[in-house]
Every structure is written in structure tokens, then in C-alpha cells.
Length: 81
Image (cartoon, rainbow, N blue to C red; front, side, top):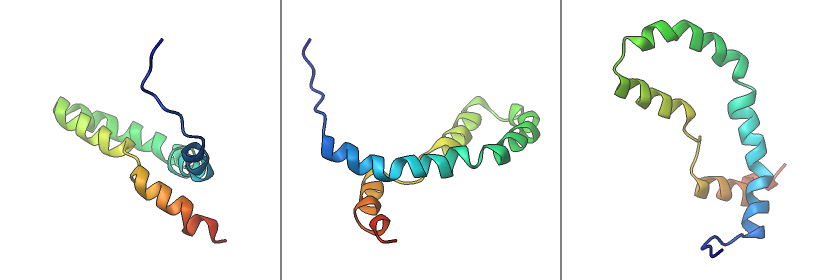
């Protein structure tokens, strides 16, 4: 099977160095804060248009930075204790 996918071990290790910490801080550590927020805002969200609901959801789950910013951080500040 032909594929255009090219795996980069270097890129993978650079991402791994920081991405797991970002995911923990951004999604796992905030879970207990987001659950009550979801419950409280759910009735209000039903009054919004489908497009507005989707836009708000996209904002909520958007990554905190671009891949370039993540790699820049991983290569510079992240290595400085």
C-alpha cells in the first residue's frame, strides 16, 4: 500500500517532550472545573443556534498554541529549569 506519510523520529521526540504536559494541564487537570461548568451552561447553550454552539465548542477544545509555538517552546524555554 502506497502512502505519502513520512514519519519523523526527531519531530516525534520534540513533540513528546512537552505535549503530554500540555495535555495534562489543558484537559486533565481542568476536568473537575469543566464538568460543573458544562452542567450549568447546558440549558443556556440549548438556546443558542447550532452554529454558535459549534463555534463555542471549537473555542473550548482549540489547542492552546500552534505546532510551531509548541516546538519553539520545546526547543528553548522548556529545556531551562
